[in-house]
Length: 176
Image (cartoon, rainbow, N blue to C red; front, side, top):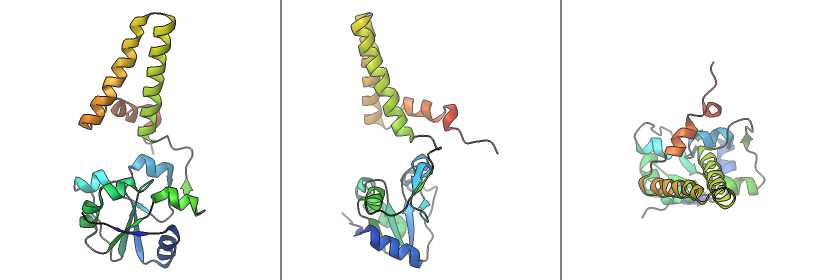
């Protein structure tokens, strides 16, 4: 398995400021919109894999995600997409922030879809359990339905609740 050479946040910052690297954030666009490293470009891994995006850089490429898990799990594919020397920001955006380095934050951007799904699913499970205890045991079916939906999403990669949340009014791009 190919390993991307890890860099510390300080090394990445120095190389980014010197213009020696292209910093590629592989998180989804909704994650990037809420918080990212200034100077990073957003190329979601899902779009790279589908061939929708191409990395064209005359500089070395450094990939990162939130915690480093996605970059490590996909290092072979990322190295293939880079086509040249590639590295990874060790432990991702979280390490960058722990080092006290600046991030561009937009608190007005909606929460990431995955977090919205977690909040909605958790609320529905809690509601089903509460109603089952206080009103009628049949409400436990709501909790079971949400649990089955989450298992299906995990097995198939298709999440109906995620699709529904992405179409919610607060997640639509503003009209220009």
